Image (tube, rainbow, N blue to C red; front, side, top):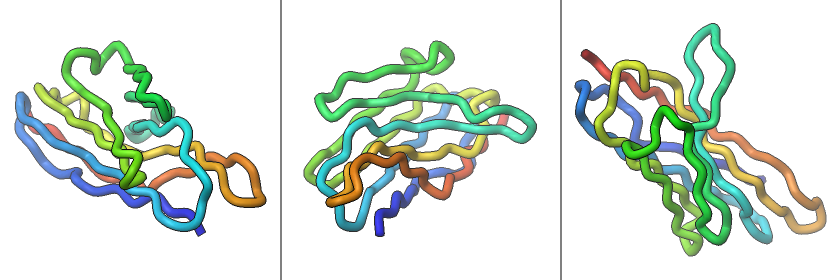
Length: 120
């Protein structure tokens, strides 16, 4: 059974920083693209940042220059360093990974979500 477990959310003042982590566990052959999404009530889930297995990154325009995505392939973990946080960054942040399982091919997995709240 593959699981994505997130950590690092919380409450921070505007201008502050947080670092999210997401570790994949279970039995699988490889992880391709990993990413972070966020969602606020009443809105669609949106991509924040993604990173391929060769570390090519992609960011939403709203977070460029403030957030940095990285991954440690040896630990099957993806990180999101969030700096200069703004109240509009408040959301539930979800980890996402494209994982190849033995005998089952590729499938997309989601973490349980972690709340990030930025106070003004």
